[in-house]
Length: 231
Image (cartoon, rainbow, N blue to C red):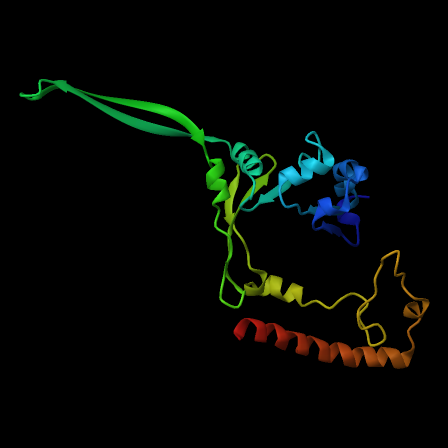
């Protein structure tokens, strides 16, 4: 079945990926998981941390179609990002004058030379501006980032603050799957917390309570979000 034929798409988000230890299956799964309608979002602190767990010859980054980087803390990661951005051509102009000290300068020559330099040097990568916060710790201004897409030129971009964007903000307010009056924390698909049998056979009285609770919950959550950003 093609990706368009899948009813649901899966996003596997793995924050602090290296804290899970080495998962050999991940190096293989990244190559074909997209064919099953899934995407993997891996977050690590820096490249050296990833290499320490999976080795320098790992294929994790090579199998990622999009790579996003923020200001690194290690020079090794900064050098890698600098190499990934590539090089640019810089034109230098040199003027030389010759003649006697007491008289006029008789000869003048101008030389134009083209030299290559990194598009972003390692120290420039480490100085990428981060998000700005106020005295209460709230993010008020986004930071900068580098975006690398396979087959495309690198992009110097800026973060999107989801709570200032109406589309992403509404998505963040979506209720937890399986949230109802009986299971107020939602239902998990975890192997350690399987779905209870009662969840599959909801009673009419319980469904009525669910409708009442779901109508009141979004209003309360929306007010909490507004108070956070308007306070």
